[in-house]
Length: 116
Length: 114
Image 1 (spheres, rainbow over the protein chains, first blue to last red):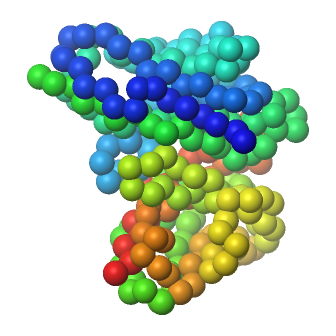
Image 2 (tube, each protein chain N blue to C red):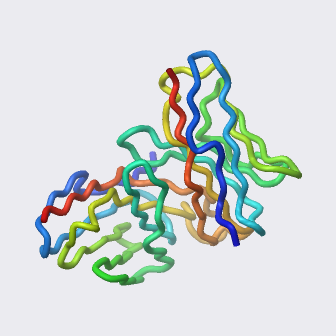
């Protein structure tokens, strides 16, 4: 069974600290997406990672993808309260190449709370 | 270019009633996906449609749930005889033709079954 696991599930951190959220998946894929969701809201796209070794940064967030290890990370630098939200990774093109599936499989989510 | 539109945003139904959720994809997008998010959980794939075709419905419950994407008009997710366990947020996403294109998500419909 395909699994996309995130850890930690809950993260409470002080402002100014750094931390990393991990996303492990159990099958071949070459597309990895990170989203942010605020309570009661839709998904906000953060990063689209399309190849092994891809690294993208936006503000205090940086995401990377290692397709061989089937691992993506979302690193938070010097956290601020506004980053409090739930973060999801999603795996796409499951199976890889030109015969992969269209659907996304989402991780369990990491609920981040940044304390002032 | 307007984003993915869903309506209604909130829907309240009593047990046994029918729920109809609508999704209009982004202009130029011919692929539609429905996902369900139960409280405190991640999104789960339900169904993938192209115009007039259901391509993958592997995530749809076997009974009471159906989806369509007609030649004209929005995609519809229909839930018959709703039960309390159907209470969830239902998100629609759309993408252009190619499998490598990113899916863009709508604001969701939050269904509450009393």
